Image (cartoon, rainbow, N blue to C red; front, top):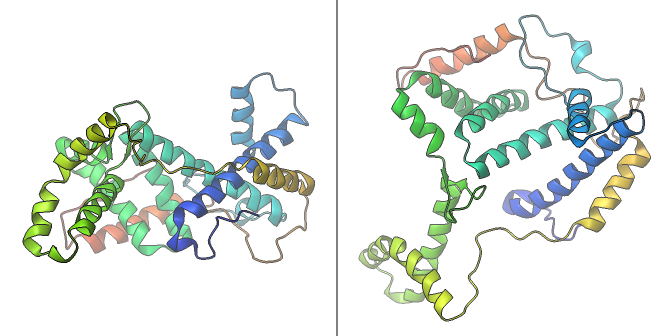
Length: 293
């Protein structure tokens, strides 16, 4: 059992994220081993393609009515395992797009998020997804470019080291709080405002000073504990239960799960729902409907 996973994950998302990464990696390897047990695969790329084709539950909205038999499996264990794999890979791909600073790919992932939020009943997030995708297709080219490519910042200057701009703002806020903590009782509005204006200069001076005096600089990167032992425990459990082999009648005892988040949608239904969302946003700006699919 991982001791750093909090009971209240909402207040410690990073620790919960570490646990999710371990579980997801174990599902990926278990799925790959299931494929290798029955097929002769000669390359990693071929194996990855087979895993995606066989286990990912992605069915973009089609021009037909949803067939319930397509979205409901008799094997609840298999359905849940493939759903963990599907949503987990979407999440990893989205994070990788952020690190690479790929604005176009980030927008493409928001199409998946729109369906996921709708199926999950997250009204505010689904509205935000509709608004974002609509802006990408209705704003001027200049504003669209800003929307896509101004979402990241690279403070290290190396490939694959981008972070979200709002996360960078949190880092700056943390540095400002450290400055204000040293001010103590002298923290007045005008002093706080003056300190905030110096953040940019302080951010450049402090690393250079620490380098010259030989002090190790604290990294903004979240350090992950080794999860090798946890990984193999989870992997053995998945293999023993054969979660990626269909067996009718299985189900989880502690919760009910009978459909995927990115499948079983009808295109006309989605377009109607998007139109209704956009009508609700028209009081704030002039928007136009767009067929995303």
